[in-house]
Image (cartoon, rainbow, N blue to C red; front, side, top):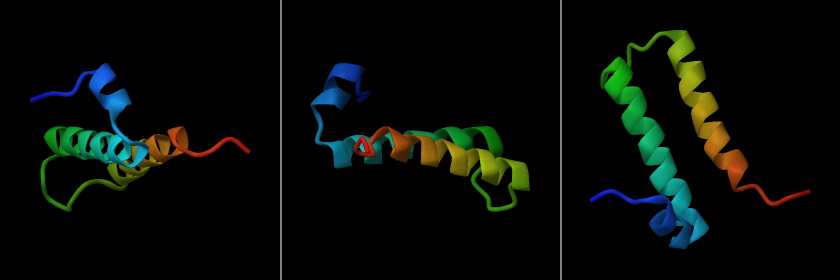
Length: 61
């Protein structure tokens, strides 16, 4: 089953974050493999993608 944007928007924020983080994780593993021998640049890109997800859910200042 896949979630479209309407289903995702209906979820509580914590669940939305978990779905998006799982998507980031899946995309990185598909591109670079499931092992821990990724290049340093790959780790930086992975961290940046995760940070982007979290930033979307930060309350405004």
